[in-house]
Image 1 (cartoon, rainbow, N blue to C red):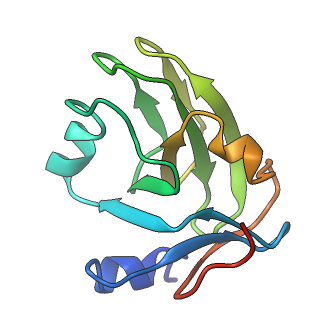
Image 2 (image 1 turned 135 degrees about the vertical axis):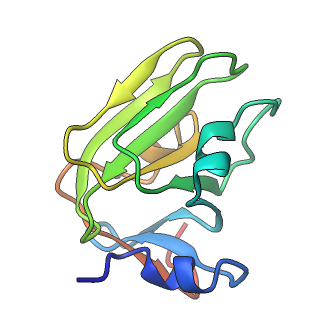
Image 3 (image 1 turned 45 degrees about the vertical axis):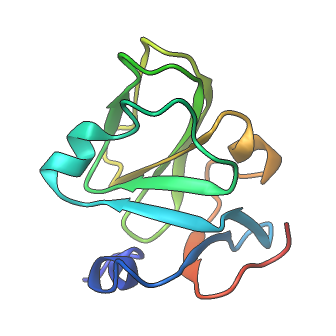
Length: 133
């Protein structure tokens, strides 16, 4: 059965937004896929910040760490069907987070998951155009 990220996997250079179907709000308007071992391992290391509206989408991924990072991030753990399993706001550097059984981890600038109103049980989907801010 295909997962909700399949369009991004098959067309990684296409422009997609991540929409919270439950709230109708845009979670991220710029998605950076990290679907292979090398890009998942690199993650956000060596960056000074993550731009607002940008999300690093790691899949498959059920756990992340912020070792060697320089800024806090929000992480949304998601099931294969796009259901939010867990939201971890403002994870500081040198920490870790996990969600047993999650299919993907979506990393955002600190505070953005809360600003989008995203919570466990919500449904995320890819869209070719943004919803409301």
